[in-house]
Amino acid sequence: MEHKKVRVRFAPSPTGGLHLGGVRTVLFNYLFARQHKGDFVLRIEDTDQTRYVAGAEEYIIECLRWCGLEADEGPHKGGPYAPYRQSERKEMYRQYAEQLVKNGYAYYAFDTPEELEEMRSRLKTEEHPSPQYNHIVRQQMRNSLSLPAEETEKLLAAGTPHVIRIKMPASEEVSFTDMIRGEVQFNTGTVDDKVLLKADGMPTYHLAVVVDDYLMKITHAFRGEEWLPSAPVHILLWRYLGWEADMPQWAHLPLILRPDGNGKLSKRDGDRLGFPVYAMNWLDPRSNEFTRGFREMGYLPEAFVNMLAMLGWNDGTEQELFTLDELVEKFSMERVHHAGAKFNIEKANWFNHQYILKADNQRLAALFMPVLKEKGVQASEEYVATIAGLVKERCNLVNEIWDHGFFFFRQPETYDTAAVKPKWSEVKRQFFLDWASVLETLSDFSLSAVEESFKQLATSMNIKVGELQLPFRIMLCGGKFGPPVFNIAETLGKHETIARIMKALPAFDA
Ligand code: GLU
Image (cartoon, rainbow, N blue to C red; front, side, top):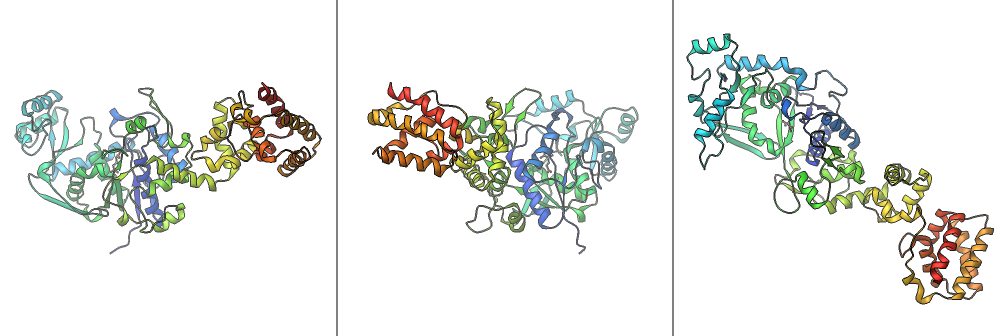
């Protein structure tokens, strides 16, 4: 057999923000392409103009860029099979729909929206609440199978609006081998006569996906499990168009389930349970609804990607942390589970924490700067990097640098004096006054110099160092929290440290 170059595609419809399940589909495509030295194509499936949302395509491209999973070909960079936007390929599809009609695999249907509505309300029963246009119903409708040939000719010649529908066999077994699920079988009797070409000449998803996968020489098609019911239509189209030998290998990826229950994880679940579901912030231009994304909530892309890889896949060992290169090397579609994978935000946070620990402090600072700006705080990136280094051990999210380090950016307004009062004394007060004068004279304000002078003075005044550290911490931070206190002092610097001591003393005395 001829060895074909691996070509995979991610084929989103630009209808809104990108769900983390979508990013996982991107990831598995990307890993497979890299592993096989193949091509990864981004194709925008925008044939349903009623669902088209402005900005969604740019958003998707930006998501791939953020995750480091960029496509080799796509609408943003072109490629040998351009255009990569289906709306721009509109003219290519009709000939294939006509070919199907000519060969008896599809037919013209002239039914008006009113006639379709009439059929639905007439056939509706409690058992079948939404009757379909199928191999039985089509006999009673107005199409080139039910009408005399001359009538069809006349309608076509008169330019009567019509669609082209696939003629699904009444009862035929269609099967294919899914890379994850193995042998999958369907009976065509349960599938309706899907529209392939709409009245305006635009193909539907079903026709466009098959034609484009063929024309773009796609060898493997990976997509969410929700597309499994469409598979028999696609398989038959490959066969009816005479392309079966070139049909890609399919893999339908398991759903990502909500943490509480078995349903598919939706954006609403995220809103309800307080975690992101979209990769990045998304502002829906139709409803103005704003949705927070993983990126802006302080997740690192490599953590996000690693977490997604483990939603439904593992390498057979206990290993959970993988670099992208390791994933490329170890990933295999056959090891993806059939069953849905429950999303777990605690686990996502754990992954992020691991990558924050490894991350360069300068990088964390750069990522944190927009958060500071939002809060109206000014600080140099260098200063923020030092703080990131001091607090990252406690952070699951980049944005939590604020929660664990806010006092680096502003003096305390209130003090946890209850923690100090019981052991506060005139001697201790004198210690801090004297020490402030000593600090003034220090030319080196390094951690060790500060700590050394603190200990020296405490010893000379006969006070236990341990009893002075807590008040000092509360002077600097306002409460019993934060990294080691001399690190805080060193970071704040001489001027600010002294200022905070002097500001706190009256509150401690009161
Ligand atoms: N356009 C489909 C979607 O939005 C693609 C499904 C497929 O990959 O075949 O998910």
